[in-house]
Amino acid sequence: MVELKMTVKDSYGLVKCSGGRFIPGQGIFSYNMQWIRDCNITLCCGDKRANAKAGMSVCAINVKDGDQITFLIEGENEEEAAEKVVDYCKELGVI
Image (cartoon, rainbow, N blue to C red; front, top):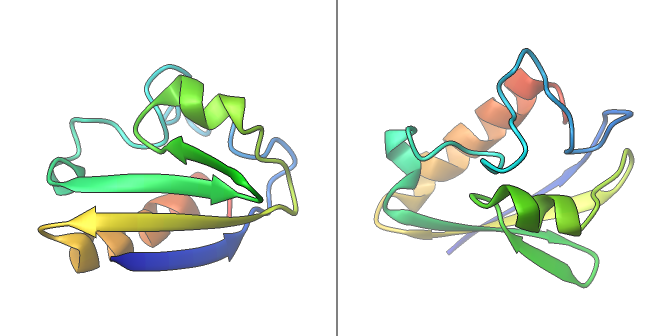
């Protein structure tokens, strides 16, 4: 398991459309992204947990600007997926 800790630096938190790439109901990561198919990605914020692939779960934990979040990544290509999670969050501008 890979554990990534980061601070959200976006006034909308994780519930935003940055260039149309984050779509509520689709989760942070799209199933079209090959690198996530073989991994479980859990988003943690405080004592709340969500499947990062499920939009309603992500919205339910209400991550806001300044919150400390942790991604727990488990699976066949977890190291590669961890790198891509960081890159994708930077691309969206949330960290």
